[in-house]
Image (cartoon, rainbow, N blue to C red):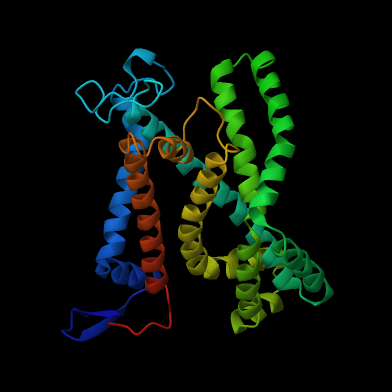
Length: 321
């Protein structure tokens, strides 16, 4: 896309746009993607910033005399089976679910891009061996591996909690909340990089044959600099799109693990735990299931719509408007 500008001599000149400017123009025309950005931003603000501004009730405080309380001024969304404020648990649970999605995605991106880039750039037998490892891991059930791996590293997280509490003099409750999430972050992220590795490999194999890469090699630039300065920036489009589509998948994995009782440990909450608790009372108190389900579904839909919009906006083969 280009814009017409006038020089001092009165001549019309076509001013070009970069790929990112063109992509932003396309994205703004996709109303569903723009709405998704707004929705995701609001959810993140509510989960991460609102508790620091407004006074939310402690999500773990129980009041057995006020169980299943209806919506009121004191409890805007009512209380659960243990008398805990549902709004607070929804907000703090969203913080944990989003953190799992974002951190696990970051871990998988780092591993996947590094593995796939090295494999695609070196090629030959190294590429064959590295991709056979990926194929082998692909043949194993992901959810089962995550469960086994999270249980394996749970012991190390307990040791870390002892060190942080005794030697670093940190608050025991805060340390427990952090170390309980570490196995989820590492397990989901460390085993969710396979698709990213394949995609990064395909991108590198196509880019390394282009003329400007050959020119960089002829100038004596090191392979590491070629990968970081010349190849990686040109892979950002597909990577960004894949990232927005990976986050909801990892949030869903966390919800599945929490639903099975293998995710976030009690009394902490996450959207998966809220769905699990709500399912137990879906016939008598459907509010406990419907409210978390709506928030969870809206977040997943918004992230997927944003990913679709970015895919269309960053597609260099798409017809220009």
